[in-house]
Image (cartoon, rainbow over all chains, first blue to last red; front, side):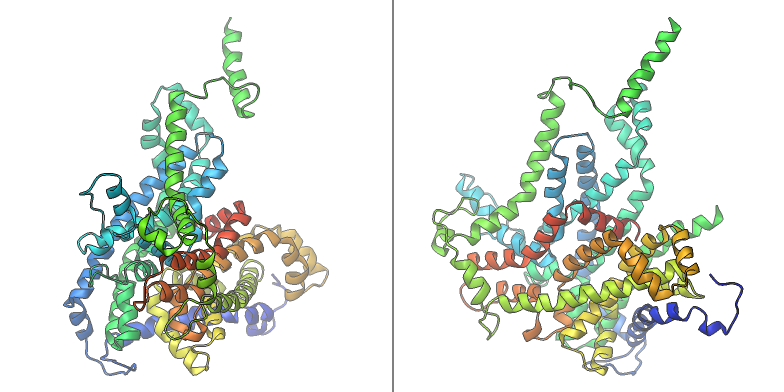
Length: 297
Length: 309
């Protein structure tokens, strides 16, 4: 602001610097420092207490030979693909339906979005109840006369992750719908008119004109969904506690259990570093496309 | 002849641009509308179903639950499960119900919301109007940090809190919420303050107002909507938190979500599904009320938080 006066550089704009101390501390100590600390200690054999006793990549070898971690990764992949595909498809279709200048749009939107206001714990517990084999949907359908009907995801280890994905989709698609709706509203009406004049059917307009135009919206949505997927933890804790057995374990739960229950800090640090790595794989290309590309233009 | 051919489309375009007006063509029950509204209603029912089942189950007695259908409305409405969930449900040795978790959550949420918004709004203000050398670097670190999985930073924070003697206390958790709320809120406020007219700020500077003077007397009163959005975002976010609650508090200071999970998923005793569902609704009630009261502002909050993140 004040370019004419040049007193000591450090004391220029002092108030703003003092006011930013919490931000600077958070950025440097917690985000940079904390991350570096965890990565550093993932190379040690810390058990109950963190100790700087380096063992190289031992924790990582052990991690990748632990069945529970492999199950966690497999679950995360299935859960990730399911939530990505279905929340994008359902979210977009709902947004497209709401965008048809319909009546009661606000009511529908309120209904589709309300689960997003609920916590994952509440979501997990409701769906635990709905999917309860003795009282829930399975029993209701059987009582209707379909005796052999079987829908018991939470107690069947081969499909339990799908039961969790159903709950996650119920909770999260509303958000995606809202983002997509905002994207659709940002598209010029003239595009629609031009497509109608040319006689292009509606579904073709969406598929070949509108969706390509909404690329930025899709990319940010993708990043939001992806960073949410890696964090999934409370939903699993509430719905199945990782069971039956270890069938619905996820990496975030692995980290928590090894750090705070199994008292094997080194494993927890190694696992959380792997989580960080997986996030970086998604974020870095995105950040490069988003911010690196802009500089060239 | 050619004149009419040109003017006709123009008139049509003009009418469409000013929105639908005049009587609508009557085809309410066209095939398209039936399909459209039919799909929307079916999906809406699907979304409402869990809420309905929660409410219905919480109003039934246990014998009725064992015999009946989870979708059927209660034959005899009883509020006993609600009373029990609130004041008698057990977690471990404590049997004073969810009320303790509720008050813990209130004691966590209120200071966390105030502190995190106070810090983040000042940050955003400094970044928008008083940028100093290096400020943007810290901001970028902050935004990148928002994508780092919490699990990576949990343990270092445990150590920091233990060193300053706040591990396990409510104040410790308040600090944690303020830290992790900072990226998104700072972004929100920075973008909002940047969009305010520069002349306003300059005029105040000419009149001799300083950093805090401009913040308190000009920026704060002029940006109430964004503060409301931030409050909505934070109240629902902090109330719904589970991970930080379970890591940084002790059983007697557990927030409501953690206590709810312990009540419902405890392995001891007979499962009382009606009490569990009443407890679940009670926990979801605060964010639901915030959601239904705030309406469009909630959408704006998540859109602002999400799209620009």
